[in-house]
Amino acid sequence: MIDVSHLSKTFRVAQKEPGLAGAIKGPFTRQYRDVHAVRDISFSIKEGELVGFLGPNGAGKTTTLKMLSGLLHPTSGDATVLGHVPWKRERDFQKQFTMVMGQRTQLWWDLPAWDSFLLNKEIYEIPKAQFEETVEELSRLLEIQDLLDVPVKKLSLGQRMKAELACSLLHRPRVLLLDEPTIGLDVVMQQIVRQFIIEYNRRYRATILLTSHNMEDIAELCPRVILINHGQILFDGSLDSFRSHYQTKTLTEAMREAFVTPTKVGDQSCTGSRLSPG
Amino acid sequence: MRKYFFVFSIYWQEGLSKRASFLMERFRALVVLISFYYFWSALLKHRASFVGYDRSQMITYVLGMNILRSLVFATRTEEIASEINHGRLSGYLLKPVNFMLYTLFRDLSEKSINLVSSIIEVMGLIYIFDVHISWPHAPQTWFFFAIACLGATWLYFILSFMTACWGFWTSESWGPRFLLELFLEFTAGAFFPLDVLPKLAQQIIATFPSPYLVFFPLQIFLGKIDSHQIMNGFLIQLFWILAISGMARAVWSKGMENYSSAGS
Image (cartoon, rainbow over all chains, first blue to last red; front, top):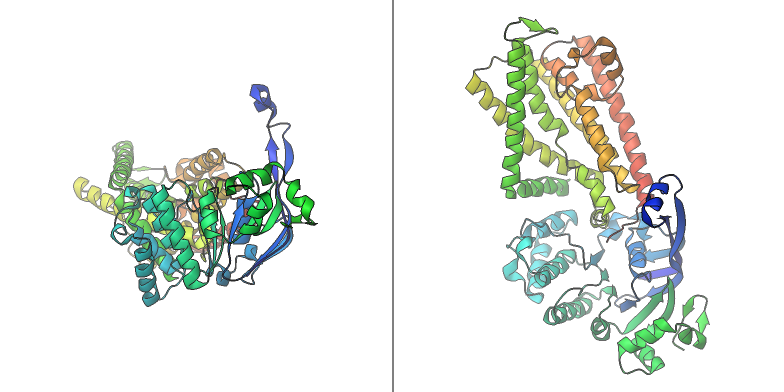
């Protein structure tokens, strides 16, 4: 379903010396630096798997998701999602996947969520009967039936996130890339969103790759985790083996351990840049 | 194409939901219209004509210019640069839509709202001030005028789309855009007929695409150019459309390679 092979992404970033002198010199002697956001990563995800993609800020998670969604061209390496090369952005591929970015919304701010739903119905060419059935089902699962005709700007953050999720799933995608889907939500709302993700995964056998800094998301949702830091995969395996490897009380402690002393995992078994829990 | 008609419709809905902004914008347009009307009326009060335009022709030019500004220059392409800079472009790229068509229909929605409003304003002004308009008599003049307006609309759209792509390389695209818009409006004849300018300036401006945005269609409307000049004008307008379309596509493709989806 998702196959990634030796994928790398390097950004060229302009440098500026600090202070006013740097600002004056900048336009004449601009220097660039290469930032290796993702370095030679490889992994595979089967149909129906729910995988947590973990790492500290700037580890390369979102860059990887952006490549898998076709937003970014990789510097090197290959990837296929649903048999398509994502960055070719073929219509057939785009109709079968979705990417939800927790801090971004596709909903129209001044209009009710219904209008955004109708726009997606046309964009994804969803048949009327399927559209009505899906809206009914998603709005029931997410408890947003009464919110669809309220202008989006009047909704709370949690209500907006639920409407956003529903809007992203109207075309019943087979692959979901979720970038911090519970960010900023209160604990009750987080629980509702997590339950919904589990239900969607079960009902449609959807393949889900999600990033989150919330360890409860990972503990509840993801039987498998992939750890990434400095653009390299540190660990790829089951959540249980990850926990037992570190023998820590909590997942957060295990994560801290992994990121502070990454070689500890690597010392067990190393295959290229991809390390297994051993 | 259904999806793009829906884009057109949803931007209409959004436009109408922002009533205060809409009314302010129309008030601004009305002030500009009345100012131009009084300026040219005063200038032609004691003269039979000015640079080849009699009073009726000049007022027709001013009112036609007002309507064409709404059709040709109304755009939301300035949002593209910001969408690129802030990563909001990603939202479109993830979906099965052609972004250029999407923005075209977004623009058409904006243009149609402005066009309807400005026609009502101009009609109101004609009625209130009892203005005499130089209407064309021949049906083919109306036909050629309509074609020239369509060409002008498409030409400005691709020009402004291409300018917006500047956002792929810099977050400071507002400055170049402002200068280009000002230059285009000045050289398009969107402030006054280009005949007002010295001959040399007219000859230089004739080598740009801008006269084909406002001045050329209004010359047809006023019957100031013959059929040979009209055909010649269409050919040049078509040349600019094809050349700038090709450039816009190339700039877009190059920009997409550069796109980092920053901020999302």
